Image (cartoon, rainbow, N blue to C red; front, side, top):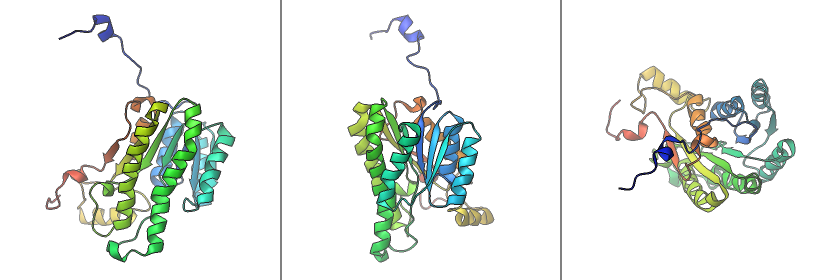
Length: 271
């Protein structure tokens, strides 16, 4: 076996850093829950932030929280189902901050609950537009700026439903599964430009959207994972920070499941 010179072994190749100093990040669905936690984590580590969501009041609250960290923030009231908003979001971010280094596609639409065959065509189209087409379009729109700045990171917030779908969440699960494949395709094509593309697949998270399910689990004492609890949004944000920063510089085309071990459980397991 050929041995490397001792000096090569002793000297580190690089310094691991979670800093996002002077980087610019876009976070869709950035006013509440996971999106808000990611925006704050990025700002606390040096990034300027553009957040987009529909509700102006929540947007302004999160903008104030980001600015309290000492970083700049713009808050755009935007509906990710509206294709005109995608270009506006990227244009206004570049106008305010000069470019884009990180894109977090967090905004999502749910499909409601019921058999997939009974999904209305209009609902199917909405779910696919918000959960899949918008992430693809925003990633493509950010691509020129990321290339010009020497690289970047795209992070899709998918779901463990993309890997093992539950009954009754058909269109949502399909859209999130397609998002995983989109990340793999883009990661392969954009790696030469030093642009990494990854997914985070959360399970049960304590957010406003998941509040009824979290409350039901708390009352019954039964959770869908062996850890026996819901995640806090900040626990998802920690993975996003890893993927956005130098610390995750060798990770691309991957889906990081953060679900308290839910996918480890077989359907017959009891927690």
